[in-house]
Length: 217
Image 1: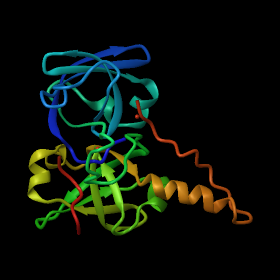
Image 2 (image 1 turned 135 degrees about the horizontal axis):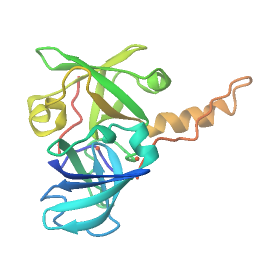
Image 3 (image 1 turned 90 degrees about the vertical axis):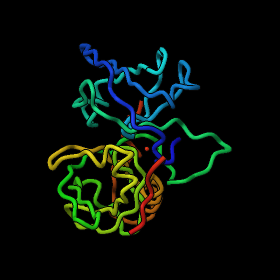
Image 4 (image 1 turned 180 degrees about the vertical axis):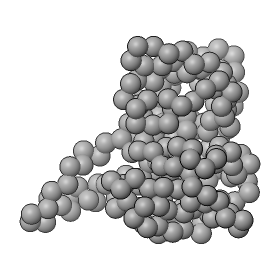
């Protein structure tokens, strides 16, 4: 479980391509300080399992489905990434409840001078995104400032732009999106009581496939 409060801006140190997966080695002195084999660390919002720790670097294995359904396949050496360790049971919930299970990818569209930033919204996720609701973008917990069928906007403060990857994206860049899991549970429970309505929702997303975040509009 994560909260979307990015702890550290790490960097991809090595990428090893394999037939149906990839091994990523990530440099992150803070998150590796107490990391061990089997621990969970979110990399750009994707929950991944640590398989090796060496100095200030940790290695994770990313399966084919996660590569297909997230932006991790586009990462190369030197690329900055948002890092967050799994939240402790006695920790503060600074952002919102996140699983590190990416629901899909959006696309960075534009940023207005006052900080309002726009992203393309996949049609199958639009029903879960509401104004003043929560969404995770590359693992950063944010509040939705505006939303339409095809895009949504969030207000980013200078600190978030400086300390996360969101200050470095260019128009057309993909970003990982995780919608509020509570909205998916409500939908699944409610549709069971609505005649003639069927929603194929296994509460999916990919994990194994979010600090700074949670700006208000």
